[in-house]
Length: 213
Image 1: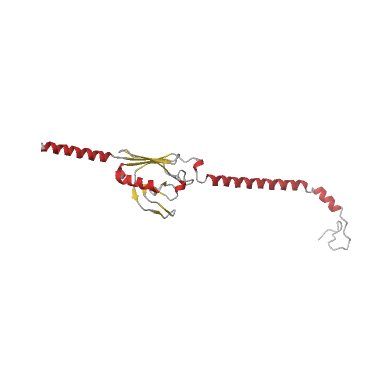
Image 2: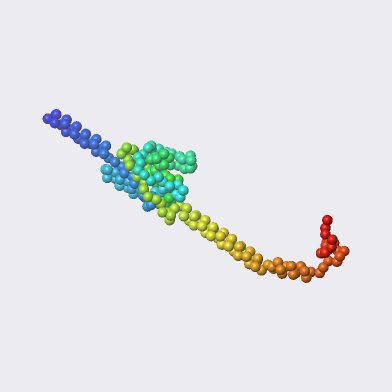
């Protein structure tokens, strides 16, 4: 009887260990939608707004595993706090941000930003399930209307259009002035109509006579 109980205890421990080993964390980042879905094999489901890389700083698409976890991190390159960082490729990480008002549209230098509370939750889930059992997938691209700099870009285009119109007006004015200017024949006639200088006047030059030597 005791032997049977021992075997049952061993089997229960084995199954528990197997279930623990198979527990997985799946993180999917939809860059086009600016959303992150998080699911675990033990039934947890989350869906959060993110900020991916803004114009000029695209977030890297691909499938990754966490490379390191940093509860408190500060970017010396970009000068910003990155709490609850889950690094997945070089300097790219999923982390919390104080710029929560920008969540839902691209605003980062390539990292995936989350609300600090959501970043803390993800950080805890990665620690619970382990980096080896965590899959991070980034897919898609931000559309133009989600770009943080869309408005600024439109303003720049407007300025360029105004400068182009100003140049066109200046060219048209110059052409009009050129058309209204007297021709060479008219100018020559006006010069010939001027009174001739007396022979002894300063600046008098004979039109005929011995050649200059």
